[in-house]
Length: 167
Image (tube, rainbow, N blue to C red; front, side, top):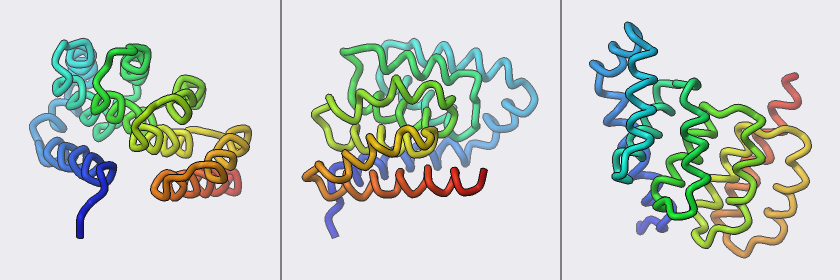
């Protein structure tokens, strides 16, 4: 079975995630010195190499380092950022971001030419969003012609609805 481009990129991100997860020294270091790891991730997020930024996003997401969410969100401001970095940043923000950062994510559901970036944005909104974002997600689900994007949007809607029901 051949993977779609989005599925392959997601698999690559998850593979990176697994490599980080299985790196006990970093996790141990984070438990002993969270401020040190936070500072290290901030430096990585400003690095010129996209692979370093991408690894920092995956690491922050896995370790749950919410303190660097603002630095991850800054990656979304760079119009020249590589798409793999943007995708990793959106995935990370969906895990470690704050609900008020959704406004920074919303434009990626509309203006990005890569559907897997749009899907990552929709997933992040599903993780961080609230009832007010359901209208946008319903519109995307209704109007997109991409099956994968529609399925991601429906999952995001379900995620928000489940969170609302819990409250």
